[in-house]
Image (cartoon, rainbow, N blue to C red; front, side, top):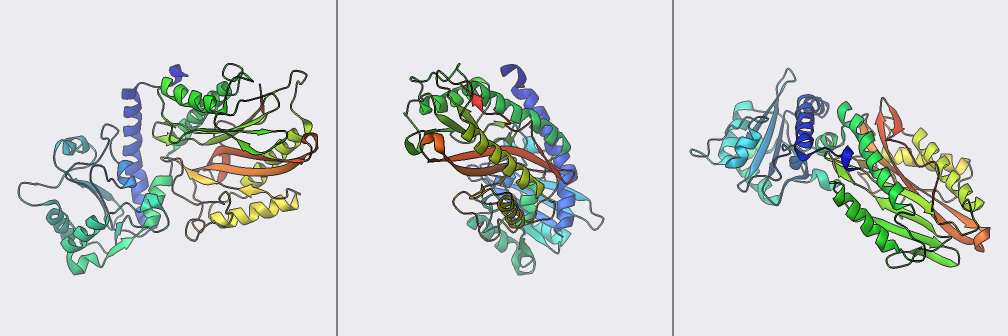
Length: 418
């Protein structure tokens, strides 16, 4: 694993190249799509707009202590000029990508911004405000107040809460990012394969929590990061529900992990399965295999409904209908966008415990060159376990590109046997 991970300087070079390419190609397309003439993004250190953080060079970990303002101006020909209003050392870090138009010796940032807006006179000014997506809701109350006061009535009335612009920026992937994503997901899968092996799990000794913290140590040792605390749960014959924490792993246990990494600014999110063999077993129980195959079928049916232009709720409804038609009773789907963030911006397709997605999140359409973590759950009654109910939770990462979904790296086709 460490041999696959690039040194920090090489990673920064790649991420900065991607950032410039994204700014050169994606911004103009999205501003035209949403009919936006100017986009203003502001943030201060320790209270950054999530979108702002994805637009900073990799050597810049946060906004300026004073304030960092990014402005994108689209002219009638469709060209986009990107500018910044920043002071201090951060101004020089941004300069290669964003020309700095603020002379802080003669005016404050709001006066400078007001002058810029007056000169360009945009018809529609986008700001990051959203009641649906937290990631598109980065404009603080105080900055909004400053902005309205600085622009005055004439121009502040043109401010538009254009959440689709922010979501579009966050969800869209370059072809280079999509190519790299396969390798990033492969790294995560390799760590899961090692965790679900006799190298890590010693039945009768190792606990679920031990495996959780093995994941954390392995990520750290591999010079990677994780965006959430991994989880490891057990299902056992004769015990209802999930076992966690300091529960010792025993032969006959069905193990599910939930694990994700962050590398080159992109996140993964995976749920895979393992089974601990009894001394006289060479395969896991046939009924569990049948349940696993039912989960694979549900994944197939779900991905067949991934059509660009459909909303998340439409994909969900079609997927559940297809599952019912194939005899998959009680199917659950919980698919979410993936990208800069693990739970990223984009269309939500079902939620655990709440298949009906709240208004706004599920009404957003699917776009090309986006990524999702596809979560499905199937439930079965296992006769060999005395009629006990078993839940199989499966999660794989996909790219929707060329108007067709494909797995990043590959999905789990066979359970890990320990």
